[in-house]
Amino acid sequence: MVQIIDGKQLAAARLGALQIEVKTLRDRKIVPTLAVVLVGDDPASAIYVRNKQAACKSIGIETIEARLPATITGPSLLARIDKLNSDDRVHAILVQLPLPNHIDRQGVVAAISPSKDVDGFHPENVGRLTLGLPGTRPCTALAVMALLGAAGVDPAGERAVVIGRGQVVGMPTALSLTHANATVTLVHSRTRELAEIVSESTIVVAAIGKPRYVRGEWIRPGATVIDVGITRLPDGTLAGDVDFAAARERAGAITPVPGGVGPVTIAMLAQNTIALAGRQI
Image (cartoon, rainbow, N blue to C red; front, side, top):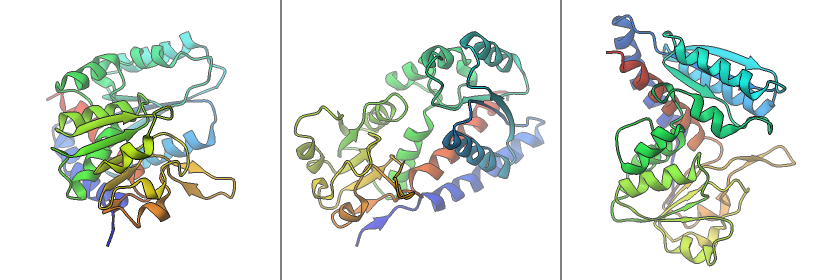
């Protein structure tokens, strides 16, 4: 029988453990504080920010929210980030993506101090991940590794495929799996023989942003499938990048959408915030 990897349960357990760490910091007069910058009024981004703040607040992390208009200029946004970099109360900074088209995303990410980069997207932290050095890791990549652990899967020696080469999920996840001694293939929408590569893999991570792109018959029997994607369909339902109904018939373990990667990613955001705050000790 297929194992449905419960992200909500894993996230709740992780947040419970993190609450103890927050108390320890507060006892030492350190209040972990996350600053969230939200540009524009995209409804999906607002929901994501609200969920992140709620999870953090539930375990004692303070949050500061900066809501900025979609018309804000690049220099004005950078100036706001610079103020947060200089604010000793703030331990972690999150700029909610995506940003309006006229804003240079890479410039904004690079403007966040590496020591406050809770998402792990700053070039310095990306470089440290690439080299396998200690540093802040991207939250979704951490979530993928935690979900594999919850399923009892050790990546060492396994053949893994990461579908999607994005800087937010695909690339960091591929590097994380490589450092965990998996043999990793990073594929994308232009990869030839994609179905064959997936069918040879014992670990499948789908992060391509196309609903039900990964077909059930591609899945190797017994494989572990981590579905990062989430898309709202015209009928209002949510779908992942994997055809869940078909894939569960072949997989050994699989994450649902919703209720899989998302909650754990938020727990990892809290974990990174606490780690950054702990550097004061």
